Image (cartoon, helix red, strand yellow):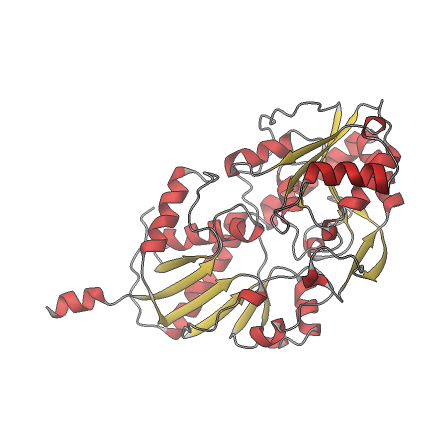
Length: 398
């Protein structure tokens, strides 16, 4: 009887609250960390944030099985760690562990009102970049609590040499951009530069792989046509092809999207880390990126082409997402972006050399398994510190 009661007590471990389904940046970074913890036999209970299962079948079946098993597992955070990887406004203080760690990021020169107070409830706040260490500290988060824990890219999944996705209307040189349709991503800067620089009869195309996570009601096709014709004063037929890919792509196929392009471009106004840049570099694609934001932890003039910033400006009055109201972000130069897109499309060996350097950097410094191991080692260290007599019970074999 006493043995049964002992076995019914959940072990000390990690209560891990985070999105893992739905193909967001948050979800991608959590997958490898969770699998590494399971491989090491660390007790983990997953509280999936947002999507509760992989209804869109974006993940491999074995990964779905392992995540489901973690959701069924039970741990006692009162003898371990409560870890949350969510936006700062979604931090919960209703559950407490012996150690409480928050993981979050933000993309502008500051954090939203109330975030600093929520961060103050935690023992540590993990951010992905030096950019965020500075912005969070400047906003009032205790610098001693801040810790840079970078994101990583699965460089075995995202790699060169894959068969490209079939994309109708591709041209001899194809630019790719991947983003959620919002002003922060600089889609207007990209469209202005592309429409001004490339004629309809040039053998160049722009592929936009977009989502509407923050504005699910948006009709992207109509919005794109309206912007080109009303804002820029150009008809679609007078612009080099712009190919719109809307919706989700299975994780296993996403690297083939990068393989279908000759270069990746995203003139963002702000990023906490900038995952698509890392994915493109891991696939050995030339990258054109803004010279401001968290991506500068891994992008520089040796492995990418960086767009000059004209100024750090207040967000506009007609802001599409209220969370950025009153903040400041970068304004990438349209003219410099035009020059860089032309340069990458014509000086291809130079662009390829930077892309090869970028691939080496991602493998050597930012590989997802290396970063997942860093996370797992830190979790184990902190678990041992708060519960030195704990017993390891593997949650998932493998």
